[in-house]
Image (cartoon, rainbow, N blue to C red; front, top):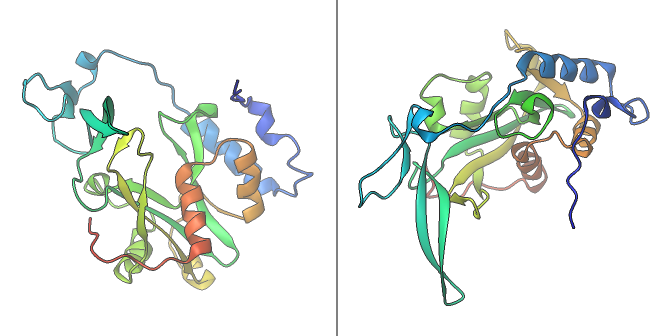
Length: 237
């Protein structure tokens, strides 16, 4: 039997002093959870506009958005070890190339992380510690995120490599994942740093991992910072 530990509000702050975690980081995280916390509950698909059921008998997807962005729900038949298996999966609308962009900026010996609330997080207030940027390319059509000018320059220089995403649930989803270093002088020259961002030490991130509040995207980008991978040609947004 596997036991999933559910963390209570006070648990995140326990032993922080022993781990040499800065008071600034702990206060920042507390404010982020208080200001961003969201709640959610299951609802009928008929009430989930702009999502709807596709009732056409020959449709490739049976759950889709009115604008055709982000994802579709699809039923798939696969042959696995000479057996036919039927599956329900989420299919990115980016049929080829990258679905999204996942980037971590490193400033000196620290990492620019953000606190981000998303409905699927199993954490207090559904807030997770994640990387500088995590966005689908569909989402970028609705506006540029913080630090986009810095990140865009790195993308043009070849930042990032394709990383497969949860293939048991997500059909052919591939993100462009990377970590880029910027000079401290360049960072401090940025006009405005949103309150949801923080320059965290590796110890502070490691501490948060142990508390169960770190996203897979942050761990993937940290992995890229170690690997120093070169971009793979042939992929495009």
